Length: 260
Ligand code: BT5
Image (tube, rainbow, N blue to C red; front, side, top):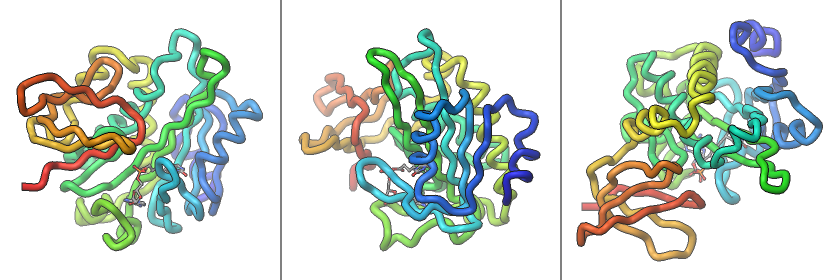
């Protein structure tokens, strides 16, 4: 992979500028710095390898060289588009699920920010927002995808099992094709962020719907309930054992199917 191949592969998409790195600490860090220096709307940072890839809080995201996708897209929402940042996590997840569908793979979204294949994590999304007063100045949508065999770390390194697209599909795919399809779907949904159609599509791909799950946020006691769907702001809608409604907002939330 190199800058020229990347430019060629994405030439039909209405992106801003592109920055490619054979190796980098974190594409989100680069995107945040570039956004502060005035990166145009829809500029993309892509790296072949990350040496300090970040998950939420201080968790690590592993991107070994030559086998994965690690990208950060810089969005500069207009004041009307300054909707809830949490919806951008759904945007990235939904776009990836639809791109995987193009390969015949049925992926699911483990709310809020994981994409699963065969119940294992194939991708993670990290959205970071830069505010200017009340307004969103830029949103960085960071996406890490395990594409080829060797990209999914062994279970010992993780808190949830991982998988690569190649493992799920039984054959390798071109990383640049996957990148193209992912960005295409993301750009298609972006103008409809927060619309009823967007929420319905996102909700339609949620993992564990109708099942009892446990959702934990920070040091709060975890909520247990049947996973029903999404609220209009992208929060998770649950039904408690007594039938009452429960809502889990974004934040550092982790969701697990309840052990039986
Ligand atoms: C995430 O965080 O899942 C968000 C990951 C976002 C990564 C992208 S790559 C491009 C951009 N640049 C960055 O620096 N980051 C973004 P979280 O839900 O906190 O999950 C982190 C957890 O996922 C870790 O604690 C590990 O258990 C697990 N993990 C790490 N690497 C993984 C991998 N390659 N595949 C599956 N699971 C992984």
